Length: 107
Length: 119
Image 1 (cartoon, chains in turn brown, red):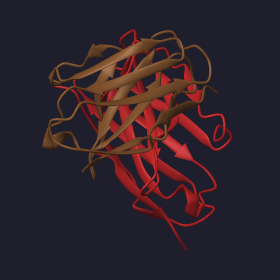
Image 2 (cartoon, one colour):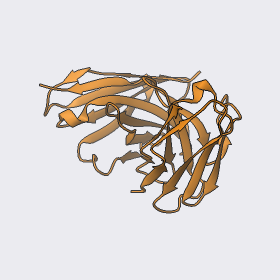
Image 3 (cartoon, rainbow over the protein chains, first blue to last red):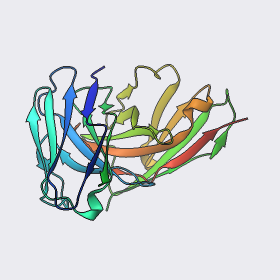
């Protein structure tokens, strides 16, 4: 199975900050990397697919980059509604695997 | 409009078999490239991918859980069923079904159903 490792596990930031979350795969996954946002008590929501494609309806302050084994999710200017937990997931092969999550909290 | 909804028991006893149903609308699982996956999340923990069934009836399972899982579909009813045998308290969590198109990403999710395993 492909292991996905996110860093950091948690992050404190302020409204307006630029933040970056990273995700590393245990082997090359080309660009088959997706990012999800989850708020408490809610289902995850797809933000970015195939590393850098913005899902329809997702604000442009979210962006993704990377290929191979190293990927990142950047939020250019944090908004109050962005405080949530973020997960990466590889769709290169089955079984699919998720990272352990990054909890983004208000400083 | 794509929607998915999970249904099943809220409480199961240890050693019992869990059966969950995902009822969906807005797409046809018989269409090439369409897939439905199951994902779970223990309370306060990370997402864990469980299984997937594809438009051509191909099935994929979590390596660690594959001996306990079975996924099937009823295309005429727009339903996907997940069974998990020999339930244990560590299997407690919220179970989600989600659509995956052309093996890209999980673009639509159900609201999830909380399953508690307790005697």
